[in-house]
Amino acid sequence: MHDRTRRVLLFLSLLVFIGHSLTLISHGHGHSAKALAAAGGFQSCSATDPVSVDSGDNDGFQENPFDACADGPGFALDVDSGSSTSMACRDLGKDRQLFYNYGLAIPAGSVVDGIEVRLDGWFDGGVGALARMCIELSWDGGTTWTAPKMTALLTTAETTYILGSPGDSWGRVWQDTDLLDFNFRVRVTNLATDINQDFSLDWAAVQVRYTAELPEPTATLSPAPRPSATLSPAPIPTTAASPPLGVADVPPPAPIPTATVTPSSTGTLTTTATSTPTPTPTPVTPAWRTTPRPTPTRKPAAKGLVASPISGIDPALGTALIVVLLCFAALVALYVTNYT
Image (cartoon, rainbow, N blue to C red; front, side):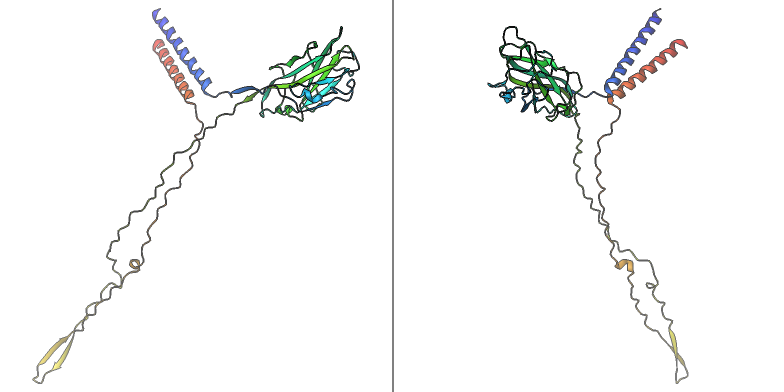
């Protein structure tokens, strides 16, 4: 029983090692891109126009409409708003105003998480009067609109209303280009149960929440400067070697002396040997001695460019694989020891 328990414990230890190795493999074989959530704060518009077709009086905020493009002392005013008492955002009897050019450019490829619209507004009130403001957003210059969102009931004091949230994309997936000035629009619609109500709007601002991927760090490998070495070849010693014997270097054979016989008056022959002087051979310098030998010039090998290291196996991955193999070998050894 003791041996069986020991084998079980050893087997469990091997499982722990294998699990740890697999964890190293999964974590060391790649990484996810980091992300950065950002918001530029509430932005003001720089352009506004009334909706002049099928919108109540077709004059929107007819007094000082540009004052709603800044959070300041002035405000836009819609006098005797609309031509119907409906409280529906898309009723054709309601006054509407467009606000745009918010400068909402975000990094290319970013994901829009949410859009918030801020309205600082109020109405003049009255007994039993009810009033609200509606907001719609367009991403194609006013051709198409999101579903409207409605404020709480307005009061007679300036109040800030936030429509949308950091995580509210208004029912659609936004592209970064949808927020460019020539595409993005905000439409404000005034609702009241009395056509004699006046609406005031101090600021119509927009804030976008988005997530932008951080760029991956780029490692630049700068090779260490190599010393520039110039190899000067050692001088080749000039040895006056004896040239091989050629035809021109062989001295001519000595002349054979010739004997001159002179008769003597006494009858005795006297032989006088005369010899022709031996000519001195003129040494001939071979052509290979007269032509100077060119001095070789050694050019250093061209320096190669240091390439970026090739992506190989992650060190953590390699370590994990080794651990797995060792554990597997130990498990096999244990099995062979105990069952053979």
